Image (tube, rainbow, N blue to C red; front, side, top):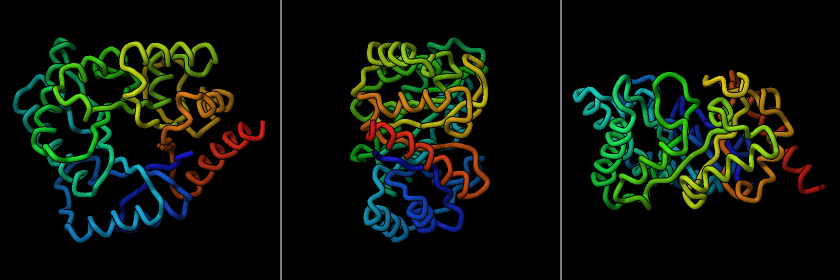
Length: 285
């Protein structure tokens, strides 16, 4: 099982790999810059090469980079959209330099505009971004959302609609977040609901496009439309729900990355341990 966490890059990229190794990660996710905005630190080519070598030597693969949440590729305001596009293209270039496999992307909100127009703007931004790095191997992963506010991406149809309008569809995949699915009204906490959800995903998007799972429990109840991650097995999805997720034949070979709450490595270790215990119970059954 490929299992990891979102790792801090505080102190430098090399320390991020060391943290991932200490946690026993076999995959990992990072921000390449502060997710809260501001100028991004320059990544020296030598530092990028050293990071890549250390990660591969540690057997950590794939590497996902999460784009900053402040990027709104669906913005209806041309100046804001252009600013978001520039920032996103810069982030894609950084992911390419770091030889990441995936750039995980929240698609943003059209505000009061027509959602279809917002979907078109997201697709246009992705199209231009991929063209700006034509030979990059980094795949863009559209991440589903919890359905709060006016954001896009909580329904599989919207994710499929974005991909459909991108010419280079082979360079665009999907990341599914379990807490977001649950909060958006997909009943993955129940056996029949999980099958129903995966069936819908296959019909609208296709399982070949699913490349990564963000494995998070939910602090809020089913269909709450609020994004609140929680510790594995301690939220409303529950241990039984995660055991079914980990055991599912269409999911178990995918990389799983935890984004559960933490103030230190102890919480990551606890959550990773729970996931490993649930997975081990499956192999012993």
